[in-house]
Amino acid sequence: MRRGNWLGSVVTAAVVALAAGCGGAAGAPAVSAAPTPGASRAITVTSPAFAAGGTIPRRFTCDGANVSPPLRLSGVPGDAAELVVLAEDPDAPSGTFVHWLMWGVDPHRTTLAEGAVPKGAVQGRNGFGQRRYGGPCPPAGQSHHYVFSVLAADTRLHLPAGATVDAVRRALAGHTVGSGTLDGRYGRTG
Image (cartoon, rainbow, N blue to C red; front, side, top):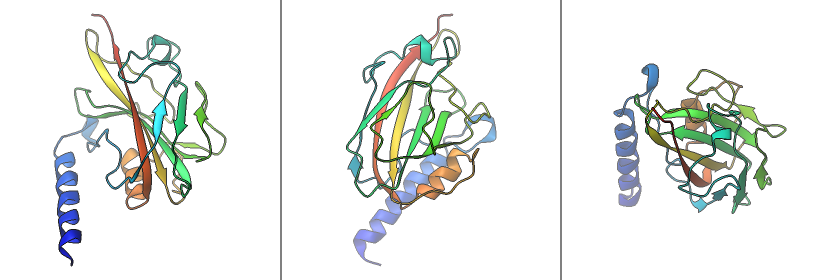
């Protein structure tokens, strides 16, 4: 094995080992809010509803209509076969919590409408045990940050509806050709 390949394998193994040691909700393995390692090209993810690092409006939370926020995408690699959308709360008390998981999104799509699942997209199981978007809902008196990630895969994932984030990450391994994130905050008064 060439030295460069060996070093890359060691770094990847270290990242996986660290992530596994962080714990997860309800016995679920922890997953990182960061895009999958190896994603080579940047995708720009924005929202007309909130600025990067800004406050996520109540409408998109458990205290409001609990619908997904609109997202705008640019810079998706031309060799992408599909997009994966993931919303996570890395500040959750029991470890990173999945609020939304969706794949099979057309890579030519430049917007994701508020509260909508695009035709052909498939939703996975979130941390609430549901196959849908579950908005930010931190404990009373706390403010958490939420990471909306978009990952471009160079192959179709062919996963069943309700698949877990771990299954999606395994399917993405070695197939992520681009990624981007949008962070927002939401807090609830005590």
